Length: 461
Image (cartoon, rainbow, N blue to C red; front, side):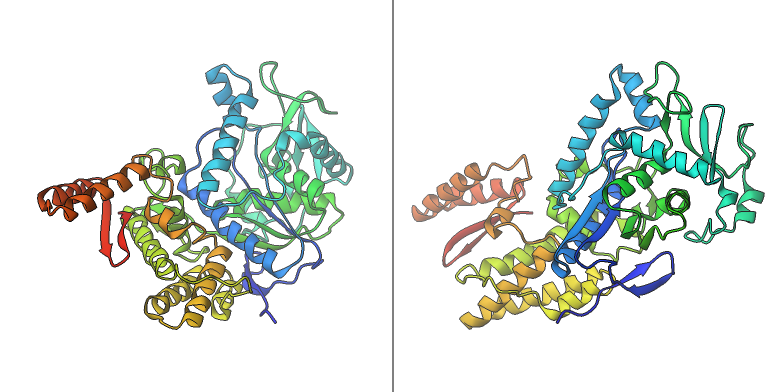
């Protein structure tokens, strides 16, 4: 019997036993991208981390509904579309497609549901009408605002006191607000801006109401897990809790809240002003997506992660070791039986402890490199593949990995094989000068070759 799953719940500030409200339908929502530009490595961390959680949940429960939204209406999108002179859909569809492909290169599976904010406008309007009717929101000058003071538990997620927030709030020039902390649910659109008809005039939604409405529409009033980056904890997730709880008559909105830590670049905060923003779209041209994924999983998801070029190179070498172990097991077939080692599973069940799980994976690789018994080799190969699949690793053929993983555009596998064949011919003819020249040429391209009893193998890096 599988051990229980414990997850750190930001709401309770403790590692709690996870038990879904309905084991036959486990629900999880992760805040997805705002699609007006390429995703950076910080955006990739929640996509990868919560992809691992989705894989784990699917192993534990018969039916998991995982939703990750697309924010396709927002002021930055509008500004980008205006600058380029195109409808917002041209911007959003382009970057949503790039996001899916880039995350797919990192081994991130598509969610079960990928709702778009613009498809849920009627649901947002309905939620706002209920909030107004119950006294938690009000309309003013074409706007609809949530009245924060009406919800006594506001600040529970981020541990912020309402009185302190009011005292410390900047005075905003917005005479239609009752309190400075009140946040926008709906705002008017000018004739040239995208907008939808509503009881309060033509306008568009605020960011926070979007997620609440999409969750209600696709997952229900109470969900099991809501997740995202730590930067979303306040005000986005705090505001979601307030408006959803009040719209549903006080019902619990999410039973668990999970947040991943920031990604820093070479010990500095990622910032456009510093110029250290690393785009996934660029990184996957330089390194295998699987190496990027492993580098993101090398640290515990709740802790800040310091991204370095050295760390990425190390992740690549780590995968060389793992795939190297699988290569030594090429003569045995993995079993179809459930082969995830208990200690590997135990690490993931302990709040997704991926560093500990990876340590188990490397111990399996160490054992594989010295195993001689066929049954033992079969067991180890099965365990490596099953454990790797659970966290989205080792899903390629080892030979494809060592050929560049299919992601190095400067590598032509057929050309490399032709050069290796030419080198073998030169060696057979005792033309060692030509043989050495070919080896040096390959090395110059970043190709390492190894001669063994079964012939010559090669790998990138």
